[in-house]
Image (tube, rainbow, N blue to C red; front, side, top):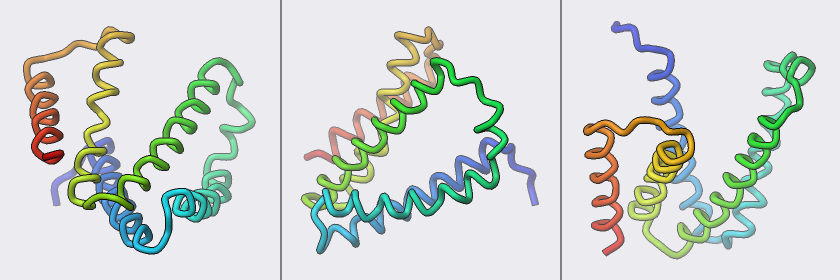
Amino acid sequence: MPKFPNWLLNSLFSFLLWGFWGFFGKLASFSLRGEALLLFSSIGWITTFPLYYFLYRDIFHSTHLGVDVVWAVLSGIAGSLGVLFFYFALARGEATRVVAITAAYPLVTAILAFIILREAFTVSKIVGLLFALLGIYFLSR
C-alpha cells in the first residue's frame, strides 16, 4: 500500500466527512428549518468537545492566550455563521448545487491569503481558482 503524506490523508478524511456532513444536512433539511438544523447539529459539535479535550488537554494549559486565540474564535464564529447559511441554502436548493458551490470557499481563503499574507499565486493555482469560479457559474444556472 502506498504511503500517503499525513496532510493528504487528513485532507481525504476531511473530504469524506464533509461529504457526509453535507448529505446528512440535506436529509435533515427535509423536516427542519435552517435555524433548527443549526441548533441540533450543534449538539453533534458539542458532543465531540470532551473527546478533543481529553486528547488535547495539554494545549489548554500550555497555550499562550494571545491574538491567535482571537483569530481562532473568529474562525469559529465565521464557520458557525457559514454553516447556518449553508443549511438555509440546503433547505431551499439542490444538495448537488449547494454543496459544490459552498465547497468553493477556498477561493475566498486563497484571495485573502494572496492580498493580506502575500502568499504567491502560481499559474496552476490561478487556473484551479478559475475552474472553481467556472464551476460556481455553471452550477448556479
